[in-house]
Image (cartoon, rainbow, N blue to C red; front, side):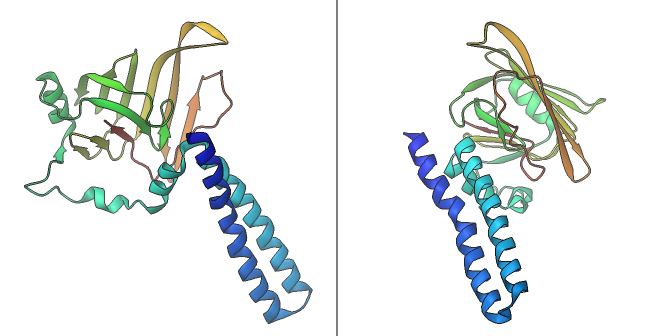
Length: 228
C-alpha cells in the first residue's frame, strides 16, 4: 500500500517546482519579452525538472510523511529544555548509559535513522536497546541493539529521551555496524555505514553491496533518532 501512495504523492510533490517555475517564467517573459526572457524561462524549467526528479526519488525512498517532516522540522526546538511536567528528559551521555545499565531507560528501542538515513525500511525495522556504554576519555558512546546491530557515536551532543523517541542531536561521527544476509549472500555478513561531519558537509561510506541506493544522510538532521 505504501508504494502506490509514495508514487502518487511523489509525482504531486515533484510537479510543485515545475508549477512554480512556470509561473515565474511567464511573469519574467511578460516583463522582458525578449530572448533573455525566453532563456531565463527555459533555465527555470530545466532546474525545476531536475529538482522535481530529486523530490520524487526522495519520496520513493523515505515516504511522503518522512519527507514532509524533514521539510517543516525546526532543529532549534530541540535545544529547548524540557519543562518540569514533560515526559521528555534531557540527558548526558553518562546519564543515558547509567539508566540503561540499571534498566531505567524509558525508550526501549525502535526503528532508527542516522543523520536522516534510515537503517532498513522506514518505521519497519524494530530493534531493542540492549546496552549503552560511554567512554568519557574518548567521548565515545556505543549503543548495542538486538539483531547484531550497534551504533558507535563520537562526541555525542544533547540527548533527549521520551517513551516514544530517543534523540542524539549532534555528533562528530557515527558508525553503524550490523549483520545481514540477502538473496545474493545467503550467509550473514558484516556491514557498516560511516557518517563523518566535516565542516558544513557530511562524508559517508559503506560496504553495502546488495543495493546501489544512495545514503540519504544530511548534515542538518539528528545524529541519531530512534522511534519506538
